[in-house]
Length: 93
Image (cartoon, rainbow, N blue to C red; front, side):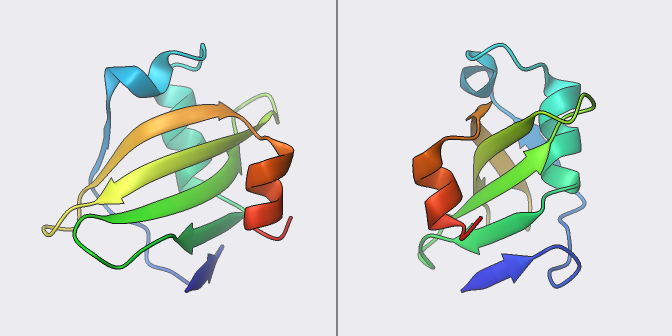
């Protein structure tokens, strides 16, 4: 299932794990990129569903993000880094 900006309801609860920050992006930048994603796609539908996303930080740098959607609707972001060609291709960007 493909989700594009404006089509999907954004989760009201986001949690950013420490491992998502290992590529140098801070929590605020990661949350901003997720909330302003230009493309999102479910990778699977089993709980927790994994969502791949691409969005820009406050400097316009495109990031790739992975988050696990929990049963209560919370999304736990566990991966954030500069957008790669592989992820851009997966998201049809």
